[in-house]
Image (cartoon, rainbow, N blue to C red; front, side):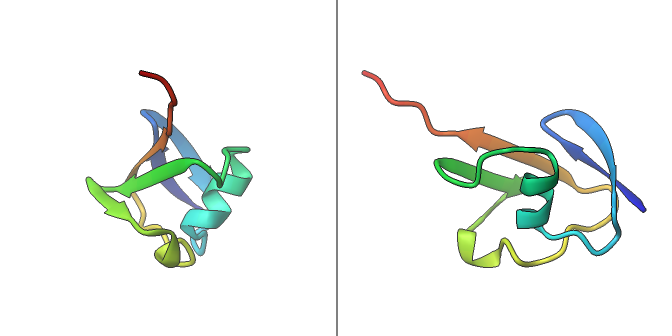
Length: 66
C-alpha cells in the first residue's frame, strides 16, 4: 500500500495503481476531467501509468458557462 493525496485528501491505495485505476477506485468521473500529478497535467493517453508513493493528484472537472 502507498499513500497518495487526491484533491487534498490522503488515500491509501495499492502500490501498482494507475491514474485510471485511482479515478475508478475513488468513484471519480473519467470523462470531462483533467488530471494533474505533482503539478503536471497528465494526458489521457498516460492514465495507464502508475502513481508514485506520496504523489499529489488533482482531478479538475470541466465546467460549462459564461
